Length: 91
Image (cartoon, rainbow, N blue to C red; front, top):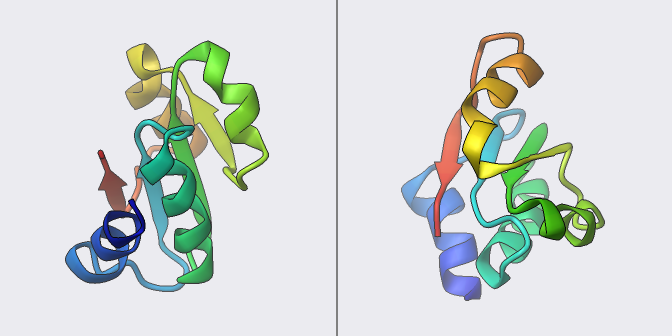
């Protein structure tokens, strides 16, 4: 779990300080670890997706906002003023 949670944003995604990331399955093992790792790497904004019953537990993991998978694209556009995110992690 931790190699994926670190490797994707740090190595494959080359997440840089000040960038934003969207993590699908935010409350899962990889998602919960990736949120903390993204912050440690300097992510300015960390967004996540997850089912409505899992957003409450995921909220304590440091996400700026959590969205349901069915409508996340519009919600991300709204949250980022149309800019979108720099990196998407989909475990």
